[in-house]
Length: 359
Image 1 (cartoon, rainbow, N blue to C red):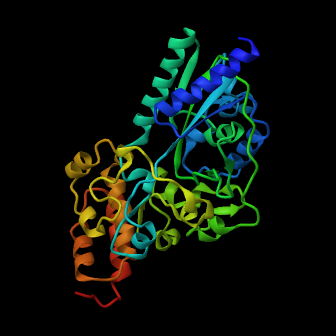
Image 2: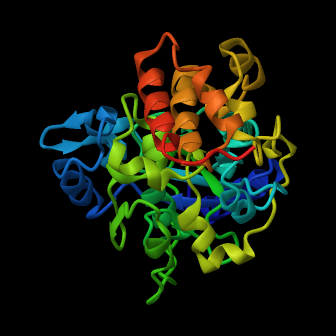
Image 3: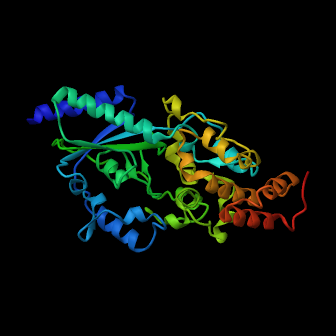
């Protein structure tokens, strides 16, 4: 395609993306610059914790996730997409301030975004194919080794904030990202400038000090990692800092000034389900495994399983004010079949052992 045809195709793809519900479409090249060196240093420091998949997919002395043309041979450019997820859910700060309520990261209170986003990206690829004929491509939705935030930044969809998430002046950071690797030579868009300035609100707000320096996150300390990715016991020293956060953490986003302007999503599927935006810790802790699987069908939360669900809530109950209801709920799980659950329940009960119980 000549330059004019390529420019028209990019405009068409943006238009088709908007028709499919995407809030922004960008185009990136395959050169990620210094990102690979940064990834290697982060992995060498062990910041990925138990997420061994982060260090997989080696390419000689490097990593395929930083080399799109090696990850998907034939790739010449990447189409990036952004989809807002902020819903009209219960006030996050109010939920965090109520120690008897459970806080779930707002990206996970509705339908699992993986299936929705992948379907939309596939529809976009299909639309392109109908217009130009068969071409090589692969769709990604946080399901393979892709440096999606780096690619999105390179394509002008935002800049990397000091918390390492992507930020946009109009959308904040409450959005999902997806990519289509293509064998089409589509000129890259220009990156946007960093607008964090001297602000350190996200760093100051992190409950576990996981943002060890601007633009560097130690996953081993991050509440999202501890409640979602970590399969073993949550380190005792970090448990009090988790508060009532049972799945993920939004503190750095809640503190970010740019999220004051974050728009609500147009996707009904991202609306809260089963009261997950303000559920009672005691009520959620009482769910049987069958109830967990049925109620969270189609939710991103289901992938951690009932065992880790109970582990997380046990910690939150240990951090809750001592009451007969809380202690009784914990005691009902004290002989659970899972050693992991029993250990966290025992810890939680110990937190209340010396406290007077309220009604």
